[in-house]
Image (cartoon, rainbow, N blue to C red; front, side, top):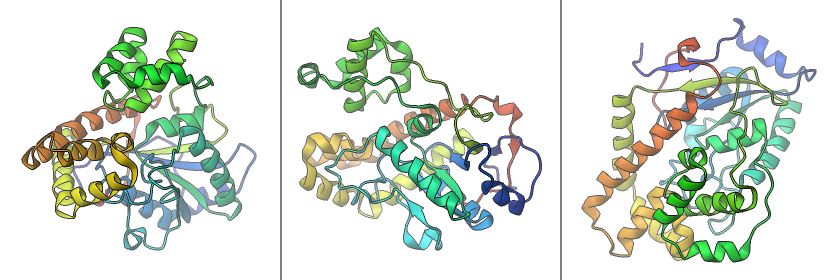
Length: 320
């Protein structure tokens, strides 16, 4: 058996056919399968396996794979790897466009209804856990944009933005990427209006949401995940990640590039001669590992202790 640990929330034993039939019953809301895990854990390939076995379609839960042209840096699944399974919310925006959690909730809600109406199982797979939260438990309290405050905050270095969030709302700071300026500024905007960022319920398998959700959580051991991250990064650089970032930078500029994730932000620094090429792999590896650790922390807050999860079937190697 593979030494990669995979878990499924406990549920009564049932066959794939029984589960598929349950999808057609709407008395308790649409049934969905959620596949989550840290970066490089194999979510995409596992989602395809489940879709083929259960008669499903896949909804990508990834805040960057919605953008055309961000292929290598986001480890976007290829047509060949999809194996004929219908995928949604991939390549639906230009990199210069905005796509928010609210946009995702609207799109995913519509797609879940459409997929279910076709007698298929909606399978939500990806690593943007904020999107899972928003879909299952709602968006944070609505706060209008504050253009003057945003203009003021834009002048501050990223480290100061994060320090301000930490001082005002340590809980929310712990949930954020310290280098994601857009999210840090938005948090400070909400804090300015409400005093703190309202706490939302964590995802729970007994589901207080309108969906009947079942979870597959892929959580590799630390050493294996670290090795997978490094191997994926080396492959991405060999496949032309630097050239991809250069193309995206030419299209959207440096400010927007920095919002598209740490691979694009860090390699953008190299393209501006702020770091040398030899430093890219070590710094990307360290930052992605930090990100994966925060993803693993989120997975531990699903609502059930990991000790109550049961082992799922053996895994296969795959992307993201």
